[in-house]
Length: 165
Image (cartoon, rainbow, N blue to C red; front, side, top):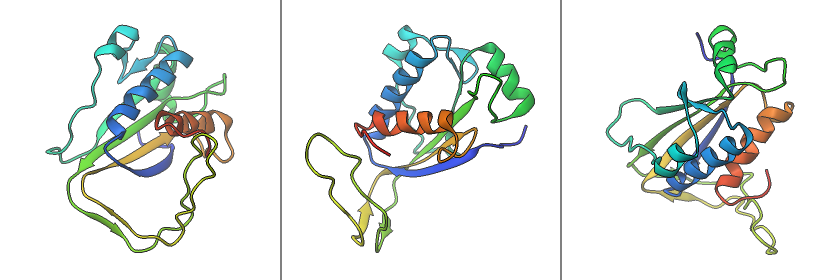
């Protein structure tokens, strides 16, 4: 099977470890029969789950999400696509990096809206990070045009404490 989904790429700070666990909880609430990496994943598994350290890994870690065994079978045959219910499998790839990341000028960057404070505009500022995660959320379709994929992306943003896309 070849990846067929829509990549949503991010650079995340160290809070990704906690956010990934929150994201798992949000998805488990939506899909009580969740399969994580093709294995049943419930509340007990969530309680003890921790993000693996990928610092020494050559390739990114993969977390694959399916609603149930039927969706997992659908995924094997159709890849990252929407099934007849309008939902589909998706994955989260991530890798921690320990080399400096530098961007001279950011564009289109804003806070996602926490509380009543107006979002700060970070247009044209620089970025310098030490340890960070490279993250790719692979959804069945473009979140700009597909409601299910937009909901998955929204859950990822919410897992960081944000409330807007």
